[in-house]
Every structure is written in structure tokens, then in C-alpha cells.
Length: 88
Image 1 (cartoon, rainbow, N blue to C red):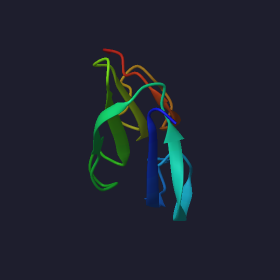
Image 2: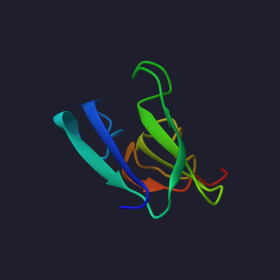
Image 3: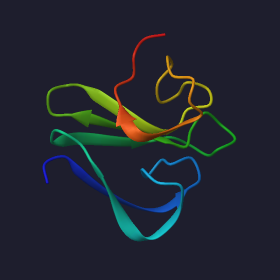
Image 4: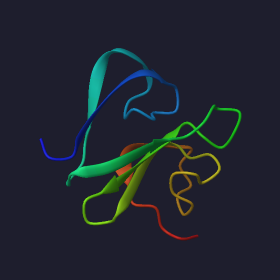
């Protein structure tokens, strides 16, 4: 699938697209080809989220968002689905 990213590991803040831990790889589907991935840091810091740079230059993020690190305009503590961050 175009833009499909596979992850496994800890995901308390849905940074791999689902809560909990994934011993088996899980996928996050995106509408376009992914050029680059960036994952946030430990939960104690602004982190626990993932962002992807898409082929058209857009960026989408998901995961921990309690400090607005995935989407500064969202009031959700965690984003399970990739969302395009908007300026606050």
C-alpha cells in the first residue's frame, strides 16, 4: 500500500497507531508515499508521538498530544490516526 508504515514496540500514547504494546508489527496507512519518519522522545519529555513527511511535502503526526506536540490545535491527549498539524 502506498504510504504504509510498519511499527512494533511500546505504544502507550498510540504512537504506533494503537494503544498498548505490539509484539507483532502493525501498520499505519497514509495516503501518500512517506519520505521520512520522526519519532518523539520518552513520555517524561514532549514526545511519544510520530510524524511523517509525505511525498507532497505535507507532514502528518499521531501519538501523544498532551502538550500539543502532534497537533497544537487539538485538545485530544493522544491522536490514534495521522493528522496534519495546524498552527496554534
